[in-house]
Image (cartoon, rainbow, N blue to C red; front, side, top):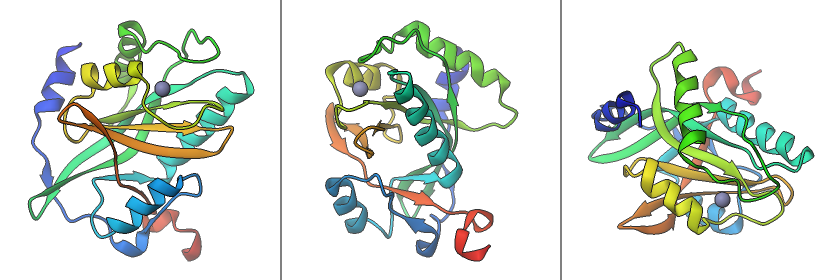
Length: 199
Ligand SMILES: [Zn+2]
């Protein structure tokens, strides 16, 4: 892995209150399980995804579906802390073209390296808060390969894995806690200028 990723992983979270509850929503692709943990944790979610990043991931997954491809990318943003609790905010995503077979693309070192290289093109200093990929038509879960990817490249507590199924129109987020996959509470963040109800 490039050195700068390591240094990002070691960066301390910044002190900042989480987004206001009225700017947070669930997502229409959330599964029942995602909705359940969203409502249970709505006052403080460990993962927030800005609307614009959500849209990019969803469109990427849908566009891959039309070519029968899995897609993947990195979730970029910031790591924050408030009253002793940590959360991540996904502000944007970085994607790459994969040598994609139909399903179960191997997210190997080369693919990840391609993504890390494309980070150089970003003109902001977001850090990696996780990754996303699609499971067209097979539902949302973490496969053994996904778990290895998570363990190898996204092994910090604030790193999440977002899985989208563009066929079933489902979305779930996960993290590893003590080596075990858990569903991660997540919410969509509408920034003031993105709020459709405010024009
Ligand atoms: Zn997968």
